[in-house]
Length: 271
Image 1 (cartoon, rainbow, N blue to C red):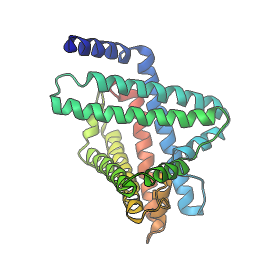
Image 2: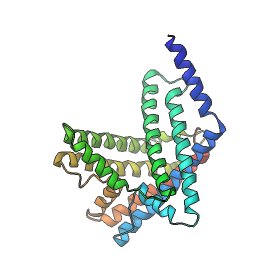
Image 3: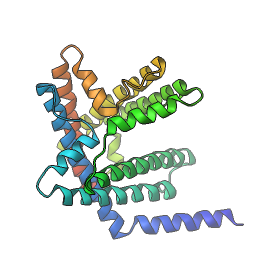
Image 4: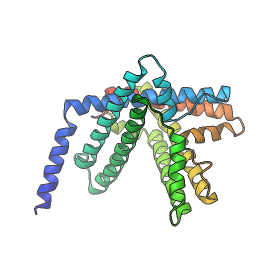
């Protein structure tokens, strides 16, 4: 079997799918949906900071807030479609890679795009549950996942490894924001203001993910799932620190910046 020929045909098919108008417009819709959800998560985080309540400051809380709005059910179906097609686009990018990239960069991009595709499939599934009249809890799902890992041989080590991976993703987001590396994801320069907003957003999301990862590592060390509640738990942990209200508000504003940047990606992203 000609493996090079099979690979070329696979890349050609993936490129054809990725270049289709349906996938392009769907992916841009997915970027916009991600922006809306991050803005809602930021708003929930501010409510948590100043009213000690406010709901769940994660994707499930944002989807629940969206479901409560007039026409929310219709918007949720749009979110489902956008996330599914954004996942499809990332999969095509994982297969085709960036033109001219060396083998190391292609491998890194393939892993990154595959991970993003999985993430958007999970988000599409969560949105589908709300759109079809159900509900979902990211925090409970995270605890269940952690509990399942704990039951495996070397389970505590596995949970700690997951935490280190999430921590690494957080560091990557922070680095990408600090160096403005996200500029490479855009088809044209969006202007200095949006670049600054994107920089703040990436750094803030990196901080939030870093806390999530650290809590997983602590959970693995303790053999407990109490603290492994995902983004909502991480933000509430911030609130428990000295000057917690101020810290959580600053991070919430950063997450809002990431939401604004994601909305801009609906226009400026390379799709």
